Length: 84
Length: 180
Image 1 (spheres, each protein chain N blue to C red):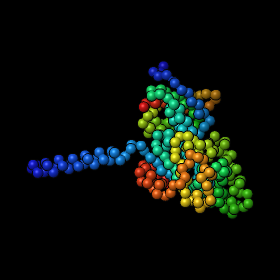
Image 2: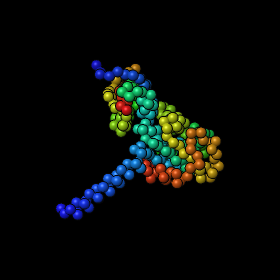
Image 3: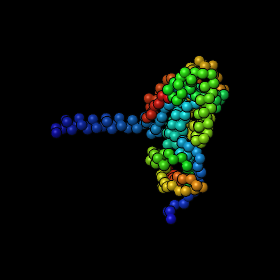
Image 4: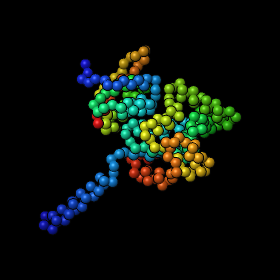
């Protein structure tokens, strides 16, 4: 369905601001250029924060952001690619 | 346009071009944020640490200059024991009640319980996160001396032996400067 593969999975469910962004950044640091991390968050501020973070950083691109039901709660799912 | 005017314009363009090149050499392209952390209460420890770790996630060069009570945020024995001040406008109880014995402990306990219930990171976790993400935490030497703090009172990653001039120099070059 998607034209890219997930290279790394990050579960930050249950953590609140600023940890979802900080930990996703740490995961991105370990990626090679072009690779993608999937981050799962339950922090409702994440949606806006991931938009802002990826728009304001030179080396990441937000490929997708959606909401899924998981274990009875709303989970925000993000795919972030390291671009440089 | 006369030949003289053209020559003048040409030399003006040339000198401007030289200045632009010079400016390019001065700026290293990395964006910077400077935060001066002056408060040591539990609630006021959060804004500088959250903003600093977030800016680091954006790839910014971030320095937090801890001075006066802000030193307590990174003090090994105090980081985990910061308290809420129940007196004043920040806490929703009358001051006449807030000054009663035990209210500071009660307010601190209530806030810590809320922090845990909301899965908010603790101050210790945020200090560690800042260090891990490359935020430079600085301890103001003058206030360290004033409060009787030693280098050993802070994590080894903390920069000591710095003063207002160090902070000022970085601030003058930073896109964002905050006093918290």
